[in-house]
Image (cartoon, rainbow, N blue to C red; front, side, top):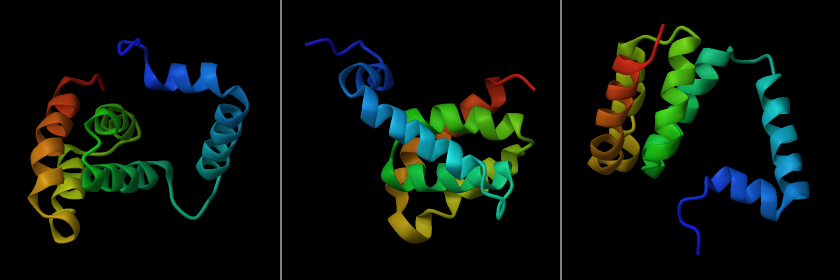
Length: 106
């Protein structure tokens, strides 16, 4: 068992047709016009915080910052999940999110 392989690379390798369809779905969602890209990233961060998905938080906070999200917007996006999921997502994800934000380039 190779635990060190990137999970997305493994997904692409083991199920290329499904991975391709998934990537097409992501592109279609990126191209919708009801929300701007920054807002979409903030929503995604909130959802992933509820799930406690620290890996996704790591990547999507950097993307949100590149799209103009402020540190307070990132913080508040995660804090608002308290009303949905309690402390677990905040405790797991807020430190990672703020650390990534602080270390990410402009």
